[in-house]
Amino acid sequence: MRGLGVARQVAVLPVGSFEQHGPYLPLATDTLVACAVAREIAARYPVHLLPPVTIGCSHEHADWPGTVSISSVTLHAVVRDIADSLRRSGVDALVVVNGHGGNYVLGNVVQESTARGERMALFPAAEDWEAARERAGVTTSLLTDMHAGEIETSILLHTHPEYVRPGYEAADFVADDRRHLLSLGMSGYTDSGVIGRPSLGSAEKGRELLGSLADSFGACFSLLTSVPVGVPDGEHG
Image 1: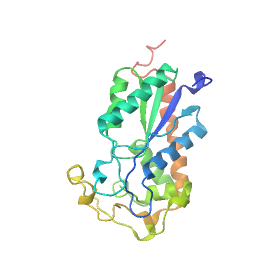
Image 2: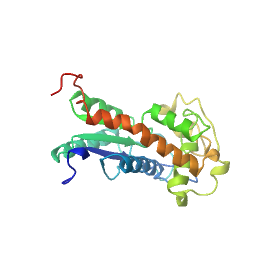
Image 3: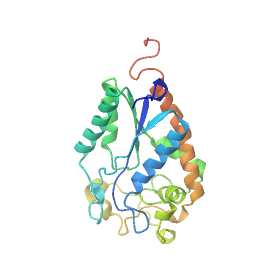
Image 4: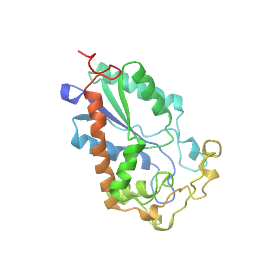
């Protein structure tokens, strides 16, 4: 971490998963998406880009071959250890870029760390994705675009088109009522592993999605590099 200086005191950690994404997207889709967002951020802001955490909490996909998960306790510990190590190296702020919706525990990590006075943030928020969806002209709502849908397909068509297999054009499947997802898993709602409309995906939408997220990151960056987290304005030295 030597040579980062005061201006590069924020580290960005992509966190993804290794899970099924239908027959046309790779198992590493969520990691590739998180890395794409993180790279876009690093190209615009003075941050230190870390290598990704490639396996997350994908227990809702356990019925599909190829899916690999770690426990929420393990993921919590890994992110905490990374943050602790960064602070010992002089980097006191960490942004976790999450690419997988099932990594619920990351929100808890950030909440607990912030309560201890540490600088940490989780990105993107739902509002950031919504702004990106609107800017990119993504037709599918965030509710419908749950897994291997328009957004993920678009980002991979833009960043890694060689990983997108034929078939996404005819793989649309919608299951908006997923109230028992935690109990039933994905297999309770889809036979293909897809929930969304990948047929609407395009490389141009992927480019616009990433550009919008990079714009949205500005507020997160300002928050972590200005007033100390947890200290009211006017009370910091």
